[in-house]
Image: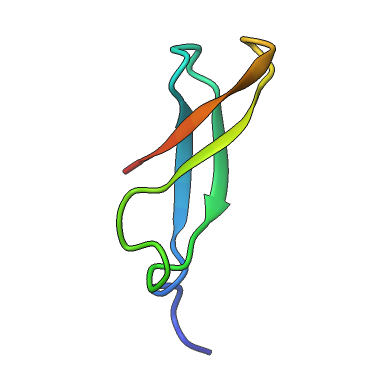
Length: 54
């Protein structure tokens, strides 16, 4: 089994300032830079950008 270096676990933090986070995996070959996804923030009760934190 190869190690998880190719698909590391990343934490996505809300840009709305609520402190809400998602945890997911990403493919480092397809997304070598920090990932940004638009997801639902239940604290802000709307869709906002979530950016990868390290």
